[in-house]
Length: 187
Image (cartoon, rainbow, N blue to C red; front, top):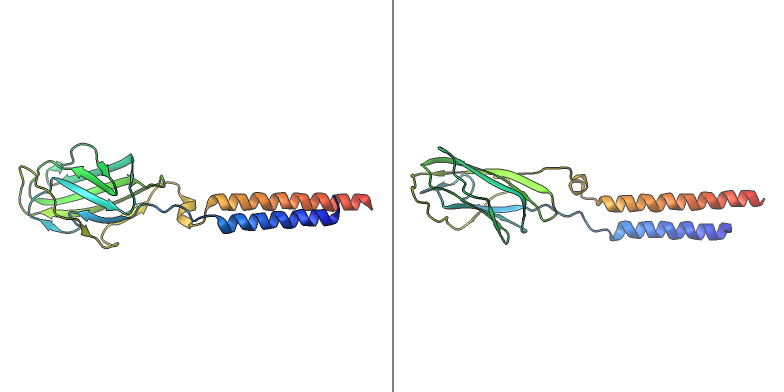
């Protein structure tokens, strides 16, 4: 391989690495909670028949949990149901008082997100009634956190692009080093 060929290979590899970085898409975003029913911090007349969490994208069934606790303890019945962008948790009738919802769902990108919200029922309800229409909540009213090892998603830069670029740079360095050694040996 001549010095000119070695430079051409090094240039080609550098361009390939730059192309990989420039066409790499952003890391997948986690699902974002858009609204809850009942809304966080609201008063409802009676405990609802279910709580509904609405996300910007459909969540995955695996790892999704919704725990609802009222004045008499847990009122959630059965597993949560995922319908389109909603996660629905059925509730048993409960007494008047404060209710806390602790949720964890698996985002479409495979990473779990979680949070909490609360509401108050003004009257007891022996037989649950249906919930009112979802109310949009402010981003600050519900705590949503990314959990699990998701460094590449948290940084916003795809880990695959970094690894590919490092591989291209390493290969380019080897080619240039090999070319320089061959040139020195030919002298």
